[in-house]
Length: 52
Image (cartoon, rainbow, N blue to C red; front, side):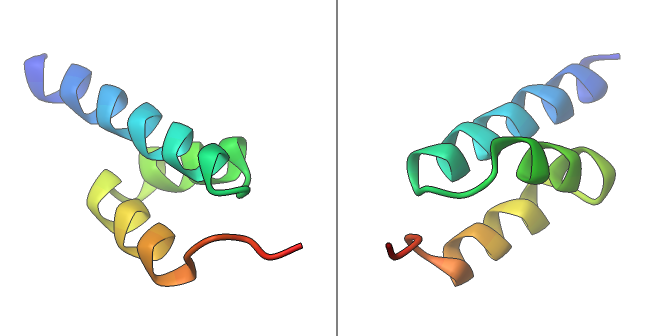
């Protein structure tokens, strides 16, 4: 149960980071929930800041 809660909390942290970088909050939330918060973080860092 604790692992599930930690998974969801980390997914929200990644999604908030995505929103702060100009990326889709919902998209990164779903990505992090379905795949892994670690994979979501790696993709977010690889994409960087949104230009424009």
